[in-house]
Length: 512
Ligand SMILES: NC(=O)C1=CN([C@@H]2O[C@H](COP(=O)(O)OP(=O)(O)OC[C@H]3O[C@@H](n4cnc5c(N)ncnc54)[C@H](OP(=O)(O)O)[C@@H]3O)[C@@H](O)[C@H]2O)[C@@H](O)CC1
Ligand SMILES: Nc1ncnc2c1ncn2[C@@H]1O[C@H](COP(=O)(O)OP(=O)(O)O)[C@@H](O)[C@H]1O
Ligand SMILES: [K+]
Image 1 (cartoon, rainbow, N blue to C red):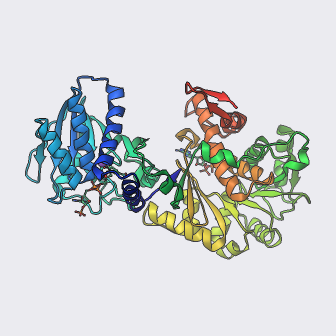
Image 2: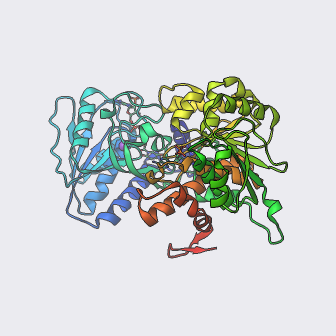
Image 3: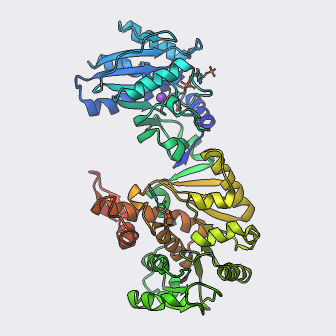
């Protein structure tokens, strides 16, 4: 699903109005009707007090139009207009008049007003600012936002939490609404997924307001939200008359004394995503534990007991995952360096592989084309340097990916895969996955997919989704705390099965 920026949304709005020959007020009415039916289907006329805080632009207009629907359906409401500017939008004014025609007079709040009392069981509709926010709110508006946040009432934000910019991080977090739920129009916003801005909302949902589909389809975006519909077409089916030779030979290079487990996890993940053959290349000390615990996995060893000093691959290797648990011994650095000189095979680089690259930046130019790098935030910082905020991070990551022709997988709650100027934002996964070794599993998954001939970008996008889905199945069975890297591996099979379930008319999923 595409993630549009504010300019693109405004353009879609304009295009839709022209093509459908409707007024902008009709589009606002559509938006308000969608919000109303969402609220009404949940509250079912409950006698709960609803405070609507409405700005004077179109976001406020949505709120005012919603107020009319609520009052016509018997809800107990209080409408507070946050009068932060004289420049009221046309559709705000149209809807204000309609409200007044129904004998409902909003309370106007300004810089020297008293803020309304809000009970902790009340509901707040936040329609102060939408995607038009372009500067920090004035002091009194910021204080009002603080007052709303402190109320402990349930906050439903319209389109975006008010005070949240779409293209930068607010330097004053207390000036942003902390929404329990956001009803956003048509498409998700990038800010829902970044660590510094996503914290302002618990959940989000989309409301279809009928923006022109052709326009949305044709408009190229910088970011895409990756769910099941996006990953399914990437899947490569297994063929009846195939044999293990058709599914590639994945090699995991890594491990050091005390960290052989990382290789074990990555290699098991390679197998579980369907790699035909899996070999590990590890220091001698890992031979017996790995060979005895994982009969399906072949083991090659370094001459050194505790670390890697010279990397050698099986002759028919088809993809390499390098770096997990590898350490940064100087002989390992030398081995990795000459390995990069000699090998142009598809490669996933993680953990100490990334740390070695960051310490020896000249090696970056030796990476094979479209190498997949899977840094967590600290590793990313070592590679691309410090960033000012999450938007700057994305900009720097895109520049890095372009410079070195690599695919960057920025791991986090919403992992973002970057390539060719575009970001693919993963939709699933959970905090249970913040556990030792879950990144090693991801490295194995992506390596195992590339070994089977998935193009590296698709392997990264598909692999990240599959990893998140396996993590979600793990937590749904055992809770967040009990998710371990091994349970994620154990659920990869179920994750594949889940991918091929389709929704039945009743909304229950069935196998395809
Ligand atoms: N296609 C869609 O998705 C549809 C979207 N719709 C809705 O429209 C919303 C966008 O509406 P909007 O453009 O009127 O902007 P909004 O956020 O209400 O701000 C109002 C104005 O405030 C100003 N301003 C900015 N910052 C400020 C500040 N700190 N302090 C004071 N003033 C400030 C700035 O004007 P300026 O003063 O800069 O000229 C700005 O224009 C969108 O989020 C959605 O809810 C639907 O109605 C239907 C279809
Ligand atoms: N809060 C979270 N929500 C979703 N996924 C998460 C969360 N925290 C971590 N993960 C995922 O878990 C993995 C952790 O990777 P990493 O930090 O490299 O772990 P390790 O080094 O222990 O293997 C990443 O794929 C990341 O996206
Ligand atoms: K809002």
